[in-house]
Image 1 (tube, one colour):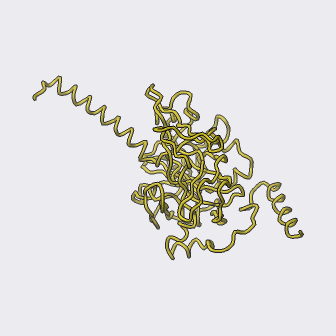
Image 2 (cartoon, rainbow, N blue to C red; image 1 turned 90 degrees about the horizontal axis):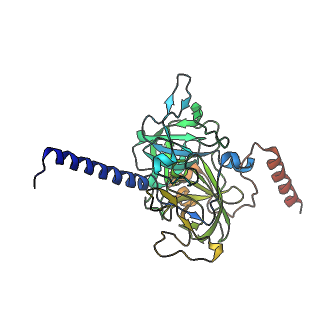
Image 3 (tube, rainbow, N blue to C red; image 1 turned 180 degrees about the horizontal axis):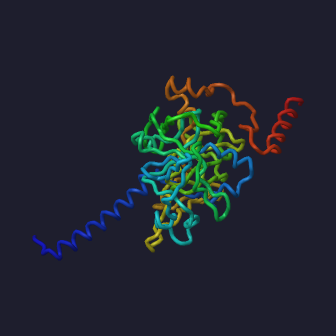
Length: 352
């Protein structure tokens, strides 16, 4: 059939709006495999953490894709000038947590962590773009309840010059990736101590950038499945947490968050609310159609990444075959009381 000029313009407008709706929906999915809240929302901002957990999250990064995300100044510093609230970017409901927090205006969001002085570990589905599309940023976080860090030094911002490794981008088995930065990182330490022998019920800590939000730490998870090639755990996470490091209660690196349950539900008011899944300790089973995974999120064990090739294993140089050391701290934290307590505990153990 044929349309008049006025009707044609109307049809084109309706079609364009429909396309925008589809793009918005697909963008939500393309910016990370879905995640969810288990029980109570355990996510905390950096300013709410003690010094141990603050230091533990320092070497995590936001993995961004897009151009013109940061403005570079003549002195080598950067400012995030293109920002939007989560409510505006993702149509969060007004009462959704963090709805008013700022997000940098990028095309895609993931998380990652420093694994060597030039390598970032992340998920495979976060390592599929061209090198020039990436921007890696350390330290995007809240410094107080009302202050978001939007200014960065040259040592906080890096580009990618090589995709070193890409596993299987499916949100489950072998979903790991390695991005090589354009230069050695200054001011941040790689994660060099691991736990490759977790047990069911062990506590888990997740650190990353859910839906592109400033850095969040969740210490409420626990291991539910412990297999050589995949772990499961009840960490609170979303799209954008893909590639996040997962730690044990001592701060030892356990694995990479790669996939899980549906993260949002439509409350019928054209806005998004977090999908709340039952905590395993409650004994409650997920209802049919809830999008909840009873066993929690998918976590690729860190040794799957380390042993992905001889080149990678040689460069990272972390032993995945030996017995797990009885380590009570991972790095030299700036908090002297934490470090001193750890040293005293080690000495006490040595004397027993």
